[in-house]
Image (tube, rainbow, N blue to C red; front, top):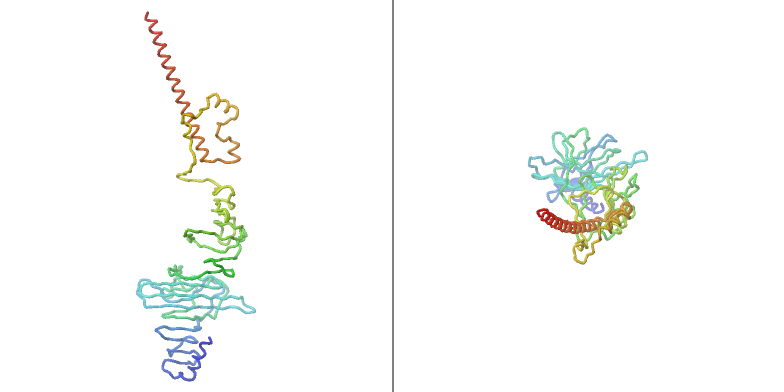
Length: 388
């Protein structure tokens, strides 16, 4: 504001009568215009700059959302350049009135055949919406249902702007506006911290009412996080350094349905459980369904077919089964219930038993063939003797 004082002095003493400058009877000051609509309006370089431009009216008190119309919206008919680039604020607060401060920074425009825009809000969440008012389509900033506010004002650049406050009863077809413009921050960002060397450092936040977790980052429907690059790291949180993916109510109430949890130290992952096992890289609490499962093995059971392999006799097999009540090399029911089953090792042992059974069958087949030959020879001898 100090930089504006010399300008005001110049206006007051030397430029009051200039054709394009004016100090109006309302107290508004115009530079480059004779009809200022704010306390200070500067027109130069084909642009209008407004300081503390009044947006009349007060928002409703818990009656539903209200809207500040920014400018018209492209709906198929080509439009001239209309834009709002600056800050809009609203105030409430007194010894007998609830404290509410509303500040947004907007950068929106409609020109030719497109509408673009982005919005940054402070103190409370605000979103851009499209709506219809008096049969025209507009881009607007939504004021949520809460204690009423007034003293709305705009400071910044604008052209073809609307900048009026309307109630929800006076508009139709309210839809979220999906911004495509980027909001860039070149450097590191700290939220709730004193600063960090990380690109984004987030600390603190509201607490989920049931789980007692600190909610630092929230993603809305159809949102996603993508981790790219050769190095991936997950920050430690209030829940013991683990990274949780869970489904709870939007306000944090209700029991958490854990989709996945990752141990921040070991990297072990659990699905369906909040506590990754220290013994396994992946733990699944529930049924695992897959079209194919590939297990990499360090050895296989084909050694059974090597000449030096000593195949147990069937008498040895019978003795072990009778005594132990399970096949040798195959875990017993008690072991499976207590320790689980190693699928890779189990498949190898099963193959070993199949290959041993194959050798037994081959031996039995040879014995049967030998016996068949002996029977055939004996039958031939008997037939010869009977013929005599």
